Image (cartoon, rainbow, N blue to C red):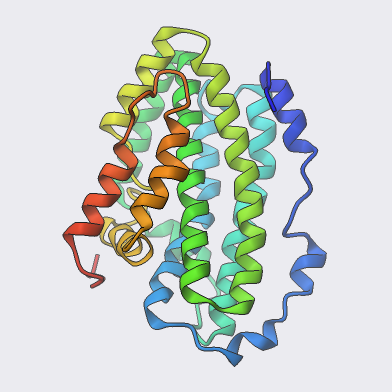
Length: 279
């Protein structure tokens, strides 16, 4: 499906039904979670994914203060996107609890409090830059969003296959459906914005070549990011990312030959062990 305007993309997105509805959530067979053990190595992965989803409200607040966030179609999308992502974090936390890994009642506050100082400083600097550049930076925001959503969806797919837990699979399939809709919105807006002028394409390419990081890295400690990359993308994982993320990004205007995602993740996977070092 080809979209000609940002409004077209938003109308498509608003026509997509939610997967994690109240009915879906109330029907999750929580009593079945403990019937099958969860491999210990996946607990840090689930915590990382939970935390990334939970920090969506922080990303949302940052974006609405920029020219990108003032685009009426993008801001409308982000209202629903924020709700869906927070729900993802909450249901992952519930799964952890039901699996026997208790979390504090104020775990969400703790996640937000533990965001790295370097991330907060960087976010402030990025906000200043986006105001200087203006709407031409929208293409960059949307391309980064698309890459992150694609990464997240592939991470969930890898976890689902590796953990092979029936209740977790049920939950992750629903999350993936919503992440896929988010990705299509971001990718479609990115394509439209990148197509508008050469300056937007050059800025986006430069930023993603020099400053792209895996989803969650920066706000969360790098050692945690590396752990999930090595846990989920060992074996044929990087080849899968090449086909599902890198080649998709290369279809965007100005991103011919782009390979930073698989180059970086491949390097992390090849370089280290699964040991999770203290932050």
